[in-house]
Image (cartoon, rainbow, N blue to C red; front, side, top):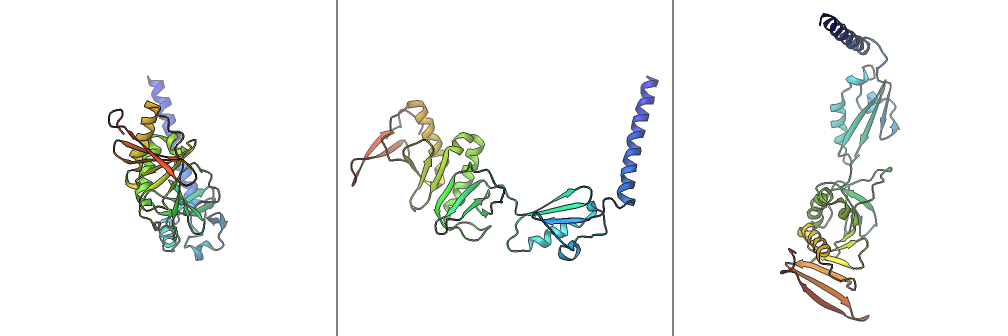
Length: 258
């Protein structure tokens, strides 16, 4: 027991000495004095004058909060991240968002991301996560603003919930077209028809439809459009010829919870 106590004391003493030595190195040597700053991957000359950093202080003692506040005053900056690269480099990155969806501008064809509350965010050059539904048929204004269609802000939280509960189904949704005011048209990978839903109830309608299809295997592959907007009712639109379509209703009130 005494031997164990001696070893424990020696171990603790070594830890204390190493910690004290590290503090002394940081406080009294120049090896961590700030030497370089990058902004969005580009070197920043004279970071003391341009950004307000202290080039004579340690890299871990920089006024990061005040620099971040200064950058956030810029109109096109909504987020600032800073990362220390030892021994003496500080990387500043702006607007590094992880979009929860994508939206395509109906006029310009510009593709941007959507954050959790439906505001547009820029896509980074190294963005590779393309397995998101793309919302189309809306106008995209300036970055960090909402689209001109308020339904986008209703749909995005539902897509987040779907991604959390059923990632496979989320990734199968290719497009949500909002070009028609009265409904949203959902395109799903592998389906020869589209789904017509309401924007405020998209999640429940799409999820209930696939639960119904998996349980009852109803043959609707000849449809061009399946309307899910009505409680306990699925309306199929089938092509008859090149000028008209035929509608067929499936009553689900007795055979499913649709």
